[in-house]
Structure formats: structure tokens, C-alpha cells
Length: 438
Image (cartoon, rainbow, N blue to C red; front, side):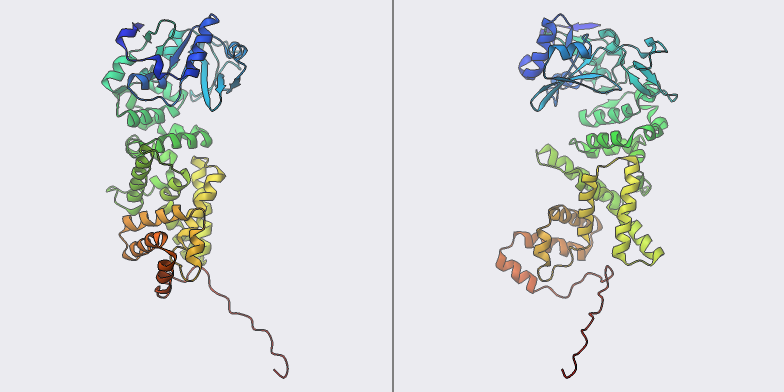
């Protein structure tokens, strides 16, 4: 262990959440050890503002709950205490011990699958054991308010200064315990602009298929952290480099080409760069738009294939293709229905944007997902460099900002509907029989 005194590190209490300090002080006052740990300490040392503050202690979850009325216990795989301060949640974990210590009869404390994955792990230990049980060295630094020192048990401070992501322990064993650690390694490398140590990187391509064993709901949450944290493009490049993109998005990965120059690959790069720009400038993003763009070309190809093979009208084939594509992607990532519903809206509007005559243009603009659909149209036009689509995108861009009088003029000067009439054939009107003598 290395103890770094206050005058040799940059962490100051003024940069730590008041609520986190309250939890630390109360645990210390009650006779327990307690430290700030993990990403909060790492980000403070890097001069960044932490997203949240996690605490570790030798108090058990039940003992923490007795100290805080605003506490609830969560998790089965890892038992944690959440201390609630309005919207802020301070997560308190008990020092972890080595799971080998668990008696075989105690299935509630520690349980491991044959593949090596930890199914349950509530073995408590010392701070030294806890440091060894954490995933990466840069996340295993402990800051205490009792003496304001920084404790380093695994060389985390050196790795942080050198910009290295290093897994603690044997990498293959640790990845088998929890394959999501591979995704976390990539996320930290992209977010912090660091490199993976050789031993941390080597097993990842071999063990990437282990992600198929992770519940799709958990992988969905991880996918948002990977692609919607402001570093999505660099994360995407690293996911591809280490063969981790395919388990998350098999529909997209199977269409990759050696030159990475298809419309699907170009639009994927562009939407990730656009998402990063918005997040880095404190603008809102919607995962539904991201998924709608990423899966657009697999959807288009499948719809065309269905229309050719089944003889269905294109609109009907498109509707079936939406179901197929979302069903297949949800087998990898359990995208919630609230998001897939919005994805469908964005996709369906693509078939309607070229039909602007009469009141259609105004009705389309009233649709809640019109702006997202328009943004997808612009991206499609740019990556395909399609003159007709570029004109349509420019028209909608001008129409949205035009005055009512100008909008009326724009609609009056539209020619015949250029959209192909392949979606839905009109049925001939049935005329009422003539009355005798009419």
C-alpha cells in the first residue's frame, strides 16, 4: 500500500458532493472505516467533475441502513446500500472479500457459473482485499476524510498518470467472472483517451463471444453508456478493433465492408459524431434516434428483399421488415418498447416525407417525431449524395422556417408527387346505383 498525504495529491473536499461527505463523516463517527472510491476519485485526480460519488466501508449493508433513514438496500448479485438525498444517490458498498472464501454450502453469499461468471458475490473482506477485487487499477484509489490521504494498493496512481487502463488480477479470469468488464475497458479507454495495457487487451477478441451470456437488458444499458456518453465515435472504433461491436449489433456488423465506405457505415460514423457534438455542448439526445439511424440500412435491405421474394406491396414489406429488424436486435440488446415505438415512428415517416401536397406537409410537421425523421432524411441525403433526396431535405429545411405565406407558395409550386406509388394502391370508388328516372 502507498499512502499519498494531502499535500501530494489534488483532491479537495470543496469538489466533493456535500451529501457524499455527510455519509463519510457519519460512518467514521459511528466507528466504521469509509472511503470515497472508484470513478469519483479518478475524475477528481484528472481535474474532471465526477458524475457521481461512490463510497466503500467495512460496515455491512444492514449496518449502513441502520445509520441512514433515507437508505434502501438493492441488488442480489452485489448487495449495496443506496443513501437517497432527493435526486442524488450515494452508493455505499461493503469491502469485498475473495469469493473463494465462501463455504460451499453458502449459496447465498457466493455463486459462480461453470463458465467462471460470478452469479452472486456477497463475501465481505478488508480494504486490501477490496482493492484487489476492483476491476481496473485507476478505479482502485481510496480517499478518506479522516486524514485526507489517498490510498493506493495496486499502482493505480502511476497508471492514471501514464494513461494506462490495466485490469487487476489475471485478465482472462476477471473477464470470465464478468464479461461486461471488456466493454468497460473500452469505454474508459475512449472516454479518458487512454490505452489498454497489453495483458488487458490481449484476451478481449478471444473472449468477446462471452457477451452472448449477458442478459440483453444489461447490454442495452451498457450500450447507452458506450455510445451516448460523448465519446461514441472513438468508442465505436475501439469496439470494432477488439471485435466487441458484433455481439451488440450483429445486424450491422454483418454488413461491414473492408473499405468501410457503404452508406450504412458512413451514416453510422456521422450519427455518432453528431451525438458526441450534442452531448459535449450540453444538448439533448434521444436513444431512439440513434438506433433508428444505425439500423436504417439493414431495415431498408430487408424490406426490399421481402418485397421481391413475397410479392407484397412495398409498404407492407416495410412494416414486416421493421418487426423483423427490431426483434433481431432486441435479442442482443433488450431495447425497451418505449424506445422501439419511437424508432418505428421515425422509420415510417421516411416513407411520407416526399408526399407534401395539400395539407400533408403541415400534418407531418405536427407529428411528435417529425424533427427526428427530418434529421434522418438529411443524414441519408448526405451519405448517399442523392440529388433528389438532397432537394427534398433542402425543401423541408426551408419550409420549416418559412412564413405561412411563403409556405403556401412553396406548396402551390410543387409539381406532381415524385414519390413512387408502390406503397398503397387506391381502390376504385364504388358508385352508388342510379335511382330510376335520375
